[in-house]
Amino acid sequence: MNPHASTIIITSLIMGPLLTISSNHWILAWTGLEISTLAITPMIAKQHHPRAIEAATKYFLTQAVASALVLASSITNAWQTGQWDITQMSDTFPCMILTVALAIKLGLAPFHFWLPEVLQGANTMTAMILTTWQKLAPLSLLMMTVQSTNTFSMVMLGLTSIIIGGWGGLNQTQLRKIMAFSSIAHLGWMITILTLSPKLMMLTFYTYVIMTSTTFLMIKMLETNKISMMMTSWTKLPMLNTTMMLILLSLAGLPPLTGFMPKWLIIQELSKQHMCFTATTMAIMSMLSLFFYLRTSYQATITLSPNSTNSSQQWRHKPNQKYYLTTMIMLSTALLPIVPTLSTII
Image 1 (tube, one colour):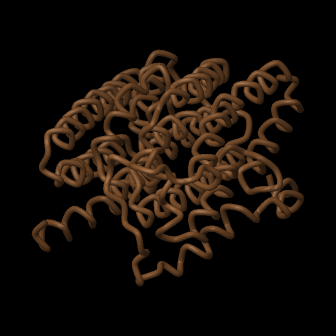
Image 2 (cartoon, helix red, strand yellow):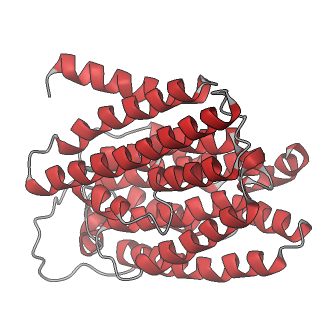
């Protein structure tokens, strides 16, 4: 890619969500969402093959529909209340349109169909940006309008996303599609607790970003795209391949790893709000996600390599090691002891 174009795209990618987060006017927030969408679209399509072009087209059309709904919601609210303040969403109808629009942007079920296909068509680093940085602006808008959001609709969206995210990943063999359904399931946990404890939602998002970024960086270093290719990844970076099992189990939410922390706190908060049935359903449905995390971990660390494979494998690892991965791995696996401190803050 041309250096000048790359600079413009990266700058727009950074500034778009920041503009949305820092704005208090609906037009500025919508402009930030549009800048972010227009910046990530050429990054998806830059591989110049049909799957990438298809993914970029699907992403652009889906985000355009969501942005149009955001604009329609803000215009309707301004027409009825006479102001463009984001925090002043008083009418039910604009709030409902806004919830649907942001659910489409986030990839929440039942508006999730674009996310696995787009991640499969993008490269690994672009997929990491789509599942982490691109979620920041819609989540910030949800947080700013939380006082006018219906708790029941948020809980139903969250439960549906947890079920679809776990169920959809069971049959997948492509790692990026597995991470897409993992993103859907984790977003379900965030949305469920949004109206009850916004601070806990942001804590869940931060831990999710840390664990997902670490996983994608490991996939990038091991140069693996499918579960079957994980069987010979131990020949490239044996220690990193072993550590990947811990990261995947942390994403699954198993104690004593970092991923257990937000789920523990969310279930505790739901129990305090006398929503024990919701908490129990979420805990049971997370077992679906646990299955494909365990399957990937098994393929990466326990299964012996086959005698023959259809894909070319790299026998020796590359000399350029990424030392920042050490810090990210520690954050992804060892943050559980800070739960008492966080519980006093939240």
